[in-house]
Length: 307
Image (tube, rainbow, N blue to C red; front, side):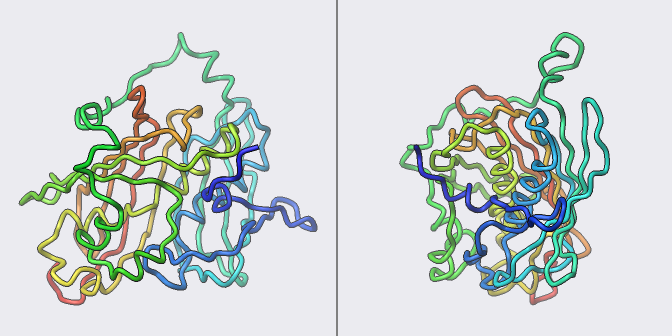
């Protein structure tokens, strides 16, 4: 049997036996979440919320969307409880409301949608089918291309993280990044990467999809930094606050595997009033199918008033 991949532990939850539909993180939070030494990485809350909600549904339902809001910073030394409310159970669709709590306070809330996967087969002839094609760069470049940048260089050189913090961050994915091309207009900057997890121990779609939810938050917030390099002469030392407010994910391919090569594009379309909006798309590298779309709203303020 294949050992569990790191991301499988990151999304794992266990039921609190004495309470119906209440779960907690299956493993202590030990990472140094993207440089935030005591906070909980948002991907943990995303992935574990999906895992908790999935446990209240039959295996015939797959997650198709997550709409979430981060309310308070979580502390990595305290377990999180996930309180799942069964909002709706239909023949085709189901909805769950998940409240993540620490010390009785809600730190994160998510509305998570599921679809019975039999319908995705039954309706092939009666539904629209189209998707944004995988971009040309992903077709013409391979993940082993020597010109690609490591995550260490992306975070240290392009983002301005201290080397010791980058070394402490545990990343369960292999990432390879194309050089970020600078533009006068931040909305024209595109961060492009290849990534995959180490092999998972299971083919269970619920585990792979929860892993995609976890993945959706990795480095995403820094897209605004990369698009505005002239605003960050001091790197992360010049940032007053940078944190996610709202985060939405749509899953387009229930059969997608997190341990296959994926092509990732990230852009920012707007920034004002101390907030930024970031978009992300993932495709299967092998067949070009669109796997996931994500939109994130973040709070971003600099120590100097130059936003």
